[in-house]
Length: 327
Image (cartoon, rainbow, N blue to C red; front, side, top):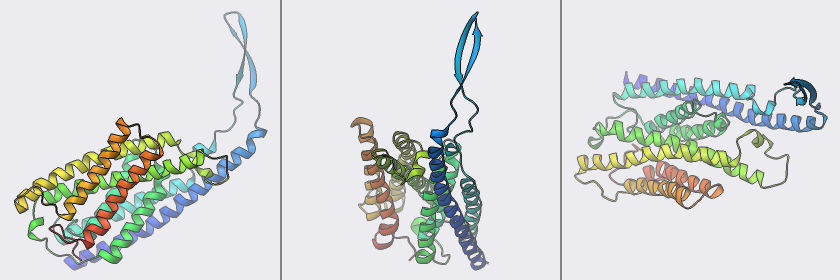
């Protein structure tokens, strides 16, 4: 029964990946369509109809006013059909993805993040869920190509290189702190990923705005300006930093329960702290040193690079008390 549920989980994982591929292609086509809309609007601008002058009477005085003649709304400010398809595919994909996570958890009879494959499976699902949930606060659908692409890469690496059969947890992981500590760490990683996507967009927008009008990167004209993107990145990363701070504290408490000490300079502990320091430096520099714009975004990307190094290198190649990759 365990093996059957685990195999069904794998089938759902591959199904979700197939749907994410469609989402990625749709978001890429959306970017191309946005660029085409911008080009069409720019080409039609010289031929735009002039505003109509209308006479109105106010308190016995005739006032002449220029009013809009009813020109169509700017198509560059509306989402295209490809964006809507991409979002629909992301929702369908994450439903399949969650199904894979749940089946893996049922097969293992525990939370499904006890090794690298399970951590990757659950982590990528949470990244997509955070991306979809943030839309209720701010329209960040233009990050769909980044989030779907990142999810596909991480899931692809996990299924090819990290897959292991369901096995019981080692003694040190048999604790309720596994639920709290690791889940919060995964959530923090999801917000850091979203912040990294916004930081990349900010850098591209800064590059484009600092040069003469060009046909390249024309779709960026439909996105918020560089300053707005940088502010959005900061706000998202701030949420991730709070979660990561809790992760660091919870990890120390769990370490004391499991090994009798709060800190032991284990490789995983050190890198978790390094990530915290980088993002703390990012927040401090932005708040007190006036590091805004491109410098702020580069710091955010360095922080996310440290997160990915911790995930892909430290977990797999470094040995220590936290060597639970299952490989």
